[in-house]
Length: 124
Image 1 (cartoon, rainbow, N blue to C red):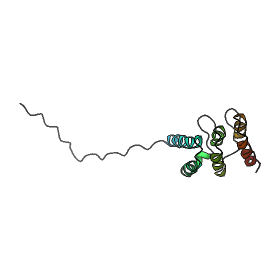
Image 2: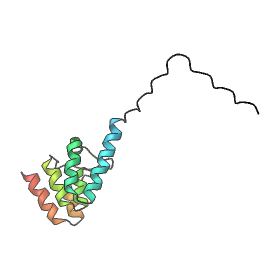
Image 3: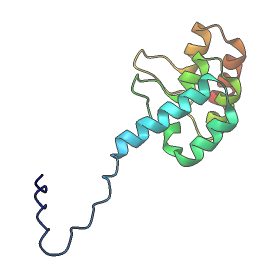
Image 4: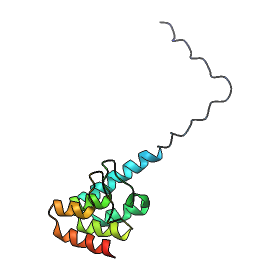
């Protein structure tokens, strides 16, 4: 039996390992948006509130489908989450790619209570 050949030794000092690359800001925004949307779908308003603490720009940012968080809350009949987004500065007059406001979405999806909340927010 013969011995396995020895591996060559590295010359000089070993290179320090590099930290992993940081994700691009767009990727972080998309991840935050997905988490917030999941919380809105469940109308988990306390989670929406905490997530908006860490991603405050999500309130005014358009989602990839062109809707805002208010559009999503109106669509999913998430009244408590809708209130949180409004309190955080969500624009009740925001228009999506289809030219609809969150009030239009609430009307089209048959959520009159949310329509009243959005009308009150838009008025004052």
